[in-house]
Amino acid sequence: MIETDILIIGAGPTGLFAVFEAGLLQLKCHIIDALPQPGGQLAELYPKKPIFDIPGYPEVLAGDLVTNLMEQIKQFQPGFTLAETAETIEKLEDGSFIVTTNKGTQHKAKAIAIAGGLGTFEPRKPILKDIDFYDKEDRGVDYFVKDPEKYRNKNIVIAGGGDSALDWSIFLSNVASSVTLIHRRNEFRGALDSVEKVQELKSAGKIKLITPAEVVGFKGTERIESIDVEINGARMNVPTDYFIPLFGLTPKLGAIANWGLEIEKNAIKVNNALDYQTNIDGIYAIGDVNIYPGKLKLILCGFHEATLMCQSVYNRINPGKRYVLKYTTVSGVDGFDGTRKEAEKAVVKSID
Image (cartoon, helix red, strand yellow):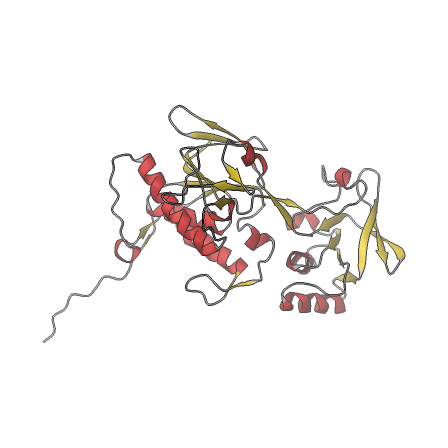
């Protein structure tokens, strides 16, 4: 049983920043996320795309923002349960909650913060016969790259035309025995440097590119042995150990929709006049997953909501205890790992 003060469901930017705000209040956090790494959409869909509306950053790459947020919260030592989804919730007599994931991992928390962005992300599966057979029990179809070492010295086929397909093709070209990238168009929608890098690797013989083409079938009994590819009306067969289709993610509220929360337009209704609490005492929703009058789905709005949510949780956990807000420029930041960040002390010296 994992125990914490605030259980955050969703490791996107809003969920990560909530860890920092909670840490200032000496509240411990643990995060559950369905994806295999923190960062949500920023890490999975567009890590190399620039964001222009983060205060203090005229321009920051989505992946770099995630890296910075992880560095910012490191001293507060959050726990992570990754590649699992929150399934069931039970409210105990003392007001705390037990949340169990789809893999049976149990978490006990004094408050819940749902920061699931647009919901649980599920991979967009290509419509191919028998794909549901091959994507189970390591039979050859993977929708995420969780451990690159799994593909060492293997023949890999990646399908897709966005940043994820480009980035993983580049990365795995130094791991796998062979990498074949298939896209239904000749043009790719990705960061220019990634497209140029794939071009270089293709010219060097480290990546095989097949465009415009589509995967149309599989061959193999126990697991994938090869895939059928249609190109210019003709078919070719490509031997492979793994097929990785990277066509993006589909957002869904998932099991959270069955928790008794008020739902409107596939989002969770909250009290934005106070603390972004839902209709269930002790459960909050922050970021893109919530809805209220005037809601704007922006990262900076999620940061604001996370800050007020943490203040409310502090008062809920410490009834009657007054918290005096202090600016970090004055109070500094004390990490759970014993570190301290603070401004340099002013030098007291007389002037003749």
